[in-house]
Structure formats: structure tokens, C-alpha cells
Image (cartoon, rainbow, N blue to C red; front, side, top):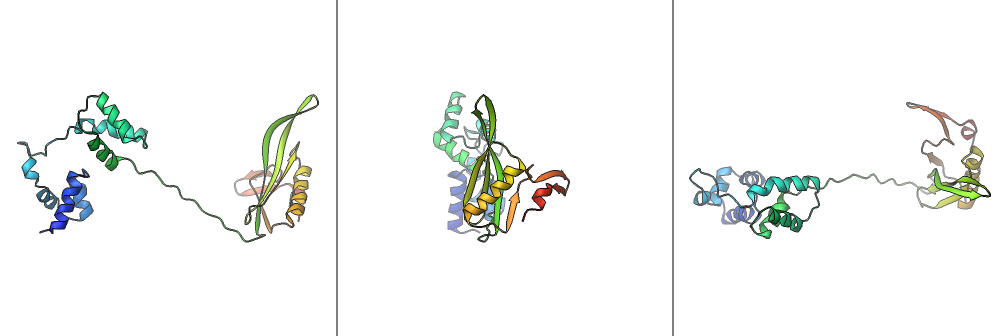
Length: 211
């Protein structure tokens, strides 16, 4: 036996939220027959012993297909599409059904990196297209150093990405920011890395000597 409160909850899930019998039984940890008894399924069974079909049933595969392609498609838009295909039922029924079958958006995990003051900095080159100098077009680059803790940034534009410009960027950044971080991270820059084979890295000689 189940309580009147649990019976009312089963009936609400079935008749209002349009949950399936098996889903309700699994969610509430009750037997399938208990759910059928609570919703008085025998009153609505046809001669074949099945529950009375819903006018929405023929359109459910179409709804599933649309939501698979467009998970954020509005229920009102789906209702309009169904009406154009002959559906004569209520929009409320469509909204309730869409709410139960809409795919749950995938969540992405992000790792928040926290560093101590003066602990870490990141260096990279940024490209800004080309600029005309006299009759020639020159590539415009920007040396960027960002401190991990404060997110303070130093940027210096350059007409090349040579090792000399790269080292000059460090010196001027350390001077402008009032010091050098203990560790500087590089993202496989050609100014730093000559060659990478698996886990083995060969660095620029002058870069490896920099302190």
C-alpha cells in the first residue's frame, strides 16, 4: 500500500508531467503495478490492453529528431511545426512533452589555476596583420607578458619575432612590471623551442642561458 500523498505524486507525474510508467516506478522506487494502480490505468485501457494513445504520439519521433539537431529549439516553434504537419492537439501538451525529452546540455569542466604573487608569468607572440612602411608591407607582431596572479600585462609591438626582439621584450616587461616572475611559461614558441620530438625539447641556446 502507498500513502495518499505518494499516490497523488504518481498521478501528477503521469497526468501532468507526462512521465512514463516505467520512469515513475524507477524514480520513486516502487513496482510498476503500483504505478498502474495509482493512475487507475484499467479505466483507460482499450480492448488491446494498452493505454489510450495521445494525439501527440505520432509526432514524438519528429520532436526527438528536431531536438537532437537543435537542442535549444523553443517548444512554441516545435508546436508550429507540428501544426503545419497536421497536429490538432494543445500547445500545452507539446510544451510539457518537450520539457521531459529535451536533451540535457553537456557541462564542461574548467580548472581554475591560482598562482602566488610573483610566482608565474606567461609569454606569447600575437599577430596583428601587416602594416605598410614606405613601399613595403611588414608583419606586425606584439610581445605579450601576463602575470599569473595579478593578470598585469605588458605588451610591446615589433616588426619581427626575432630572438633579439623576444629577449628585449622580456627585459622591458620586467622593468615595467617592477620585477621578474619566478617561472615564465611559453606555449611552444619558435622563439624558445627549436625542435620537439615527443617529450624531448631542444631549446634556443641563448634562451636557455637567460636568467
